[in-house]
Image (tube, rainbow, N blue to C red):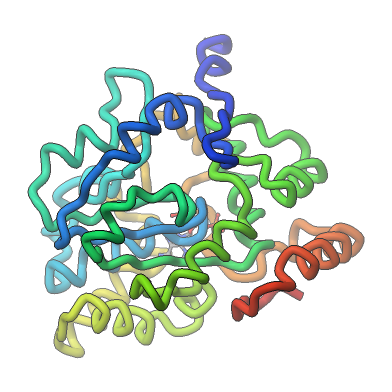
Length: 296
Ligand code: A3P
């Protein structure tokens, strides 16, 4: 059992400078060749930035707030993960997508330059969600502890350095948020922030609604805000990832729906770690002005 568990922690292999889970790297040419339909929607994020939350909001918007319709299947079935490849018999994202008819709601963690070109050629709508670096790091640390397919995070202090060096799945947070930021206007990408969603979920749900070209009633919007609260989603078996076996997501270590808060980094970083992180952050982010909040 123990050996089996360890076997599952797949190493990272670099694709065009970006470390990815080895099964993704091995199949990257198939992922790169994927051609979406122009009606497909892409939800892109760095891991742990609020992907699942956004997927749920979008699904409810597309289904006019119908809770039952959105409980038809777990999140990764309703909204396949483009690049995921796991050992058989687990279906890959591409296998799931093949069986669905567009419009499809597609999730990716790939940085902009690794997203198949067809998404841009076909002008697919794209929602990007970014989360402040320190909270994103904390969330990723706990996820890497519980997700038995990702490399061991190791001790907290060394994980901070791994994150800063981009030595984690899907690579550098800094490069990731910058890659979509640089393209957002040219590609009509809706660039959202987790902190904005927490501050005023209704405002952000309405923003997504307008981007999707929808106009739902105030009542339906309120319903969607309620159904996508952290509490509702944590209790919803179709959105809380309880569908994933414990051998893969060991929620006795840390639950997938962990805290859902802004500023939890303050419970993790020592003042010294925070200072060191801030100095490096300033240097890495000096060429852009992305309005991240709650970092200091
Ligand atoms: P925490 O680990 O900080 O709790 P992703 O879906 O990209 O993997 O992101 C997961 C993070 O988003 C987790 O953060 C999770 O708790 C949080 N999250 C999920 N649903 C949420 C919601 N409805 N409201 C706020 N945060 C949510």
